Image (tube, rainbow over all chains, first blue to last red; front, side):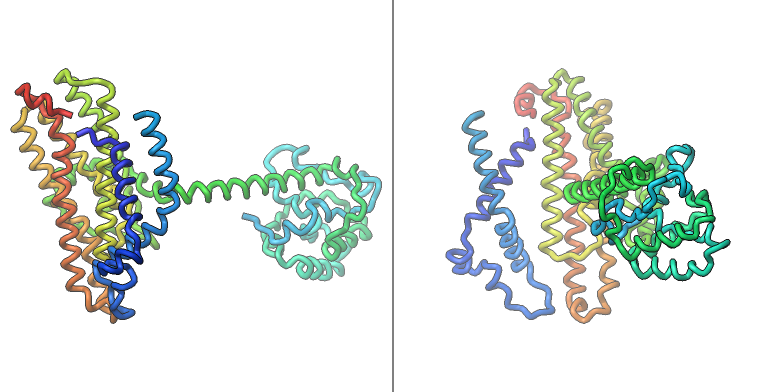
Length: 83
Length: 382
């Protein structure tokens, strides 16, 4: 039950890593989960929920990629030293 | 403030073209700091741009329009400043009016901004120059402060936060009563000001962050108290409880925000509003914890059920106004009209989702605080 902030941080880090690892071109397009291929609707219509999710994933990946490197390095060092 | 577009271009005290060696002969203006008393320092920034009408009425009326024209032509950026500094009690008044030649001279600095050809260090001793230097320094400090505030504002939205804490006792009491018994409240709409909702002080339906913050802290303390009464307390528990509740709050907020984004529910709710509404459940949780001290498990569960019912009612009613009322706005637009029915359903689902998550979370946060009868369940605690 001890769901502390550190646990939350670790869980977030793992999830973000999972999102960033999925390569857009090689994998997601094949499955059809890419952010670009799903935009088949017109200009004025609202994108579907799936397209919104893909957009969200794409933007998360773009924003988080670089800081994630540093966070991972920090966490690995932390865990190595403090266990 | 008194922003002047020409501030950077010219030397700070370069307009002083008093080519007179004897300061006292031309009626030296005593510095406001020498005089003491209440002084508006900003008068001294442009000592020669000061409209010299007070002592030009007598002799140099012919020079008046000329001078004003020169002033206005040469420094268009400072024209609004001139309009402001119409102090009838300008310290320039002591300048004697028997020097028409002198009064003509100050026109030149307006045309010739580099009036100070050879910097004369003795000028630094003159109080007017010191005043200008001090004024310049103050301007720099003010600019630095505004820049600092802007940078801080980018990370922590201080001004928006202030809105949520603008509460008073009457609001807090009536809001708490509303949280416990919302069934008789009739009007749930929020009054709006020009661009945002009215402050919570004046509008009972507006969300605030004061009650959730206080309730969170009280929850941590109450949990510590209850644990202590069961001899299960240690100081680390406080930290664990606090960070656990905070982590759940963050998760909840992230889930709400991403749900709103994915379902494209257009609402005037902001993230801090969601935080406020998510924090109201702590009030019910505290109450249930205290009742569990008196009534044991049954008392705890019944109180929990009642407060969560009331909270669900309160949330659905409050959020309905802010989330579902968008349908009225969008019927006029062409693109939006197609999705009102689907959007309506989505919004309803979102509301029900929020209302359903609250009881679950408030139970999750407090069930381990119940007094334990059996030894086997004691091992599962925390």
